[in-house]
Image (cartoon, rainbow, N blue to C red; front, side):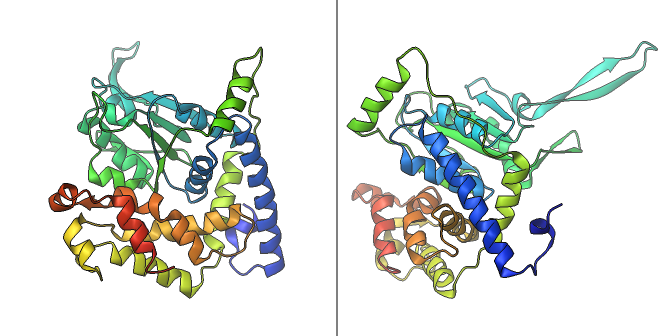
Length: 336
């Protein structure tokens, strides 16, 4: 165990040295990912913030925007054991967490043996998660929150680190189911994946249709990622940033909102887990950008990704054409 992991009173110079080393590694990791994924800089940033915060990410976008390739690339760059589950309507919970099978020994003795499912990995890609039934989607709830699964009353711990990066098709497409609110809240960040710019798409065409393609190279490993995640939690957060987080999250709830617009248009708002997500994500973003402490600007920049899947519009708001992104923009004006 390193000093970074077990000491809380280390000299400031050593902590700064650790931060600078981590920043260099993260810059190299991001550069390696951007050589493979074109025109998705903000998607890459928010995905890395998710991993550094120790959380899970939900990537939403139409097919063909390199969501799957992004997850594969991140698994390679961070040196994580990666598995993929293709969610389909006939997928069952046991297909995710595993199941017990009855075996008979040579002596005729029968016993149950647990066969681990694909959830036992460091980076799980839940591809098109909203194409499975709500029952199957809910099979990930315990794993995402508790980092273990329970089968037949027996607990099975998952590897560390453990992250879920799920991809989701827009709900307007055929054959999709909405994710349960409880599961949505387990995702630290919702990452909206859009189309690349014309320049980025041109570079992608030239780089991916030739004889060979750029291949990502490992930069970190699972143990180092755990160390960086602990380092993220040590980055100080000023009172002004904490106050901005609390003001923003509480203003987004109908019960504690300071504006009539929120009380009229929001059916339910973000819980305390949103504030916790902010506290980790702003630190991770500051670390990635080479700073030693987060600012209110980090809160504003991450507000859409952290809040939009934790808020629901009322019927009246939908009838009036009100949108969640528009409400979040106006909420951010309260702390700008």
